[in-house]
Image 1 (cartoon, rainbow, N blue to C red):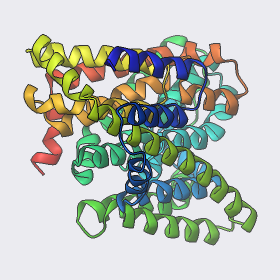
Image 2: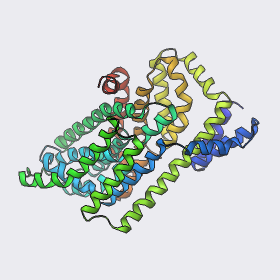
Image 3: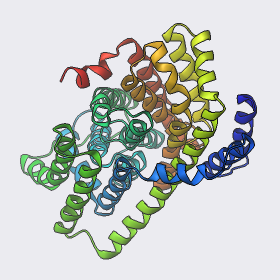
Image 4: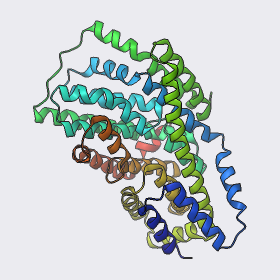
Length: 423
């Protein structure tokens, strides 16, 4: 069966709104049956997918971020950052992006970052006269930092799929993550300066700064302990995620903000997301096994290397394909479908797999704020009680900045590779 027919059937299933996990899994089972192969390979593959110690990091990070979300930690982070930079031109915008960056260093989740900071920042910024689409777009984009600044759930999955070092991927994400956050901050300050609609805040007193910083300090220390334990080799990502969940529970309980009902809600929310992620992984595993037997990744790799002998054109083609797919698939589906197909071509092109992982995630970030299925657009739409058009109107400049960052990564690869290889 040709790659074109398989791709056509997969797209048809997705257009018919078959859930991604079941579209991938059912098509993979059919291909195995058609090959023909004994279908007892399917449960073996499914079990092999779940039997991974590294994957324990996913539910643990999700559980930790949901505990922090229910514990109102986003309000503390935003208040602390605002006390230091709120009086700057566009200061609340700066505080929003910095808060997103700080929460990203704890949660590893784009959705959790966007939802947590948006609940605090949207009413505060709109009350101060900031243009509503700008506020919504900034929060949708700021949330995407949750899958680039370590720890990152998509980078964990990329490391598992490609057998790359997850701590090295985390280190590689620091430079692009800080660069992208800086771009968002600069744009926000320029926009506020020339729009002239916002109300500038008064400079906070040292007492206010000290009080706000002390409230946010436990969360900052939590982020430092998680990242530090991974980089120093004290704990694996899964172990540090488990430790982070316990510390998050202790912090929020000590603050008097955690109840049994909130723990139940956090656990239920994490369970739903974890089930979705694992089902997609399982379906993608069966599908990737089937298309490997059909030699499709190998053939695509040969075609790419034959038609794109120059790595620059290869990366450009990959970027265009990912942008197109991003209009229809959410981030994890993009990663789990495309990486097994594209990864075999990297060595022939002399492309560093760590660099490619970060490049891929930046493009996945872009997909999170592009319609029609940009997950962060819907999160912000729900939290801000806005129309999708309002969010898209504010988000498109940030999407352009992400694309420019993806292009810059190719011409300035040290932005990604300097920290992991020269630490």
